[in-house]
Length: 92
Image (cartoon, rainbow, N blue to C red; front, top):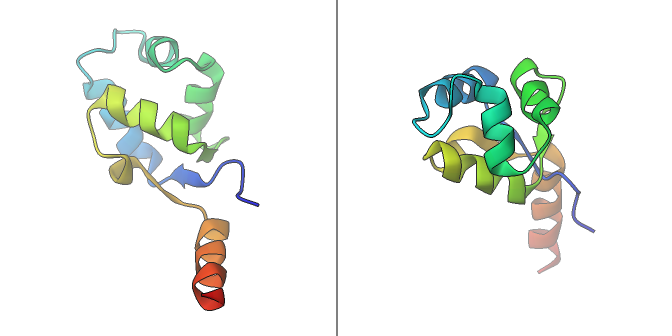
């Protein structure tokens, strides 16, 4: 079974700078980004403060698309994803 949130924020300061620099995001960055990505504004706020570190692939894709950056620049697989990949390779 795959983990529910297989990606985590690579560097929250980089995420914060990308949000601030995004042309489609208004001066109310967190609320605006939440609106265009379809999540609650507290989710974006929690990612920026570090209270939330993991996201689904779908959310990572939406955030990356809105911010105009590759998903790999903002998110990395969680350690459990690495463990699962190692196990799957060993079984093949």
